[in-house]
Image (cartoon, rainbow, N blue to C red; front, side):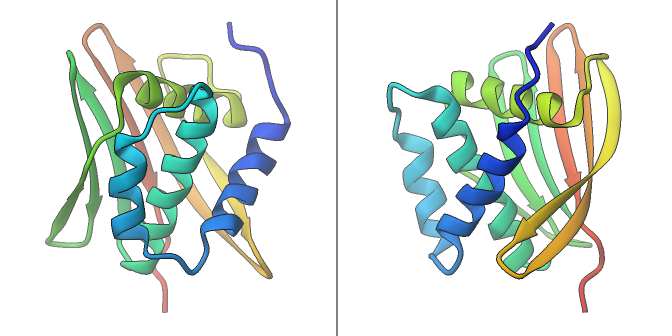
Length: 146
């Protein structure tokens, strides 16, 4: 069982605020290749950039998937997918753990809404996680904007 950290939600929103207005596409590519001594910090950085990138692309879904040792991260529009450089396995595992902790999801499969405060605005997304023997997924569905 994971230890609940009420500050993870706040830290994720702070990281989003920190990166607001940057070039998400190029920054996330750099972040995917950088590893520091703090895996959780790396995971928060990658996750915040992926969420912001998905928002600016006005996409409907952000997906993190691991099948065996292959990790993919995609942003999905109605008919188009954008593949992002995936994070290293420890960072991926930490991203999943962070979302499970924030939403209190301990079961292998579950989902809940998540509200993210961004500067003077907020957005509510739907988060789903699923874990089976050799596969794990995290899907974040965004509301229709505009």
